[in-house]
Length: 112
Image (cartoon, helix red, strand yellow):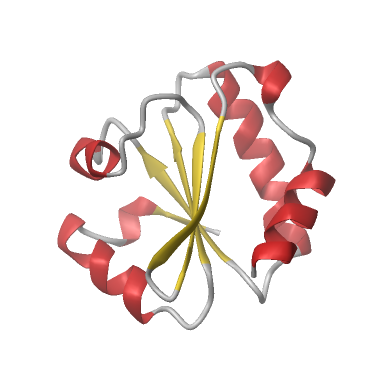
């Protein structure tokens, strides 16, 4: 799993379009409770799906232009890209709506 600190904002379109692996962008903020819960869930997903998926954590405040471009209004929000195209969007404003790691893995494997 990577964090967004590895990239600058001009790299995003190239990164998404040229990746051989599907990319899951996880938009969060460090102080958001649901984001912290989702980060734990995403860590589990990362451990179980190492090769078929690249996961990148994106601080939506640090990269507000990117968050605005993708209309990120609820945190956490997950965007799955394949060959540069948005495949699915998963967003939740409350911890009760966050799915389990197993369900997320099943959903992602079905889309990859």
